[in-house]
Image 1 (cartoon, rainbow, N blue to C red):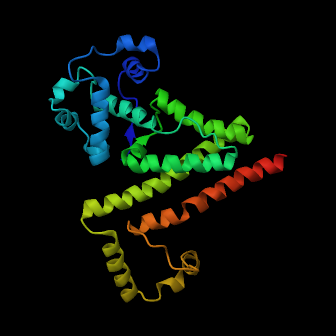
Image 2 (cartoon, rainbow, N blue to C red; image 1 turned 180 degrees about the vertical axis):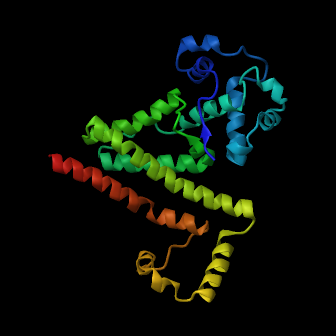
Length: 262
C-alpha cells in the first residue's frame, strides 16, 4: 500500500525538512529537551520502519525505541504523517550527491547500483508515493545528481525529463520485486525454494504439457547455462541476473538518441 507524503501542515513540514539546510528555518523547530530531538525521533522512526515497514510504524513503537511515551514525541513531530516525510528525506541523504565518472554510461550504472542498494537497505522507501513529493533538501539533491549525469550526457531538458522516470521506475521496480520476495517468505513462513518446488511439482503433475500452449513463454525461460548459485528467493536471483542487462537496454536507447541527433 502506498504512503502519501505531504499530509502535515505545509509551513511546519517545510521548516522541519529544511531545518539544517536553511538557517532561517531553525527558528521554527521545537525547542530542545534533554535526551531527545527531532533528529533522534526521525532516526528511531527509520530504524523501526527498516524492521516492520511503514504500515506497522507507529508513534508508540518509535517512543518505545527511545524509551519514551508516544505523547512525549509530539513536541518534536506531530504525528506519523509528518514523521514519514522527515524519515524519507533523511535516508535520501545516504545517496551520493553526484556521480563524477567520466563517461555518462558508467555514471548512470553507478547511480543505478547505489539507488538499488539504498532501496534494499530501506524497503519501506519505495512505498512512499511520488504522487506528492516530500520536497525536502535530500530529495532535491538526489534528483539533482541524476539530472547532472543526463545533462553531461548531452540530453535536452525535455529528453531528460522523459528519461528520469524510466530510470527511476526501472530500479525501483527491480528492488520492489526483491523486497516483496523476501517479505513473502517472512510473512507466510514458507521458504521461497520450498514454495516453488511444491507449486512447480503440482503444476507439472496436473498439466505436464502446459508449455506447449505458451511456446514464446518457454523460449523466454530457456537458458544456455544453468542459473547461478543464489541463496535468496528465486525471484531475487532472476532480478540479480537481469538487472544490468535491462539497464544496458535503457542506456542503449539513450545512446541511440544521442547518436541519431549527432
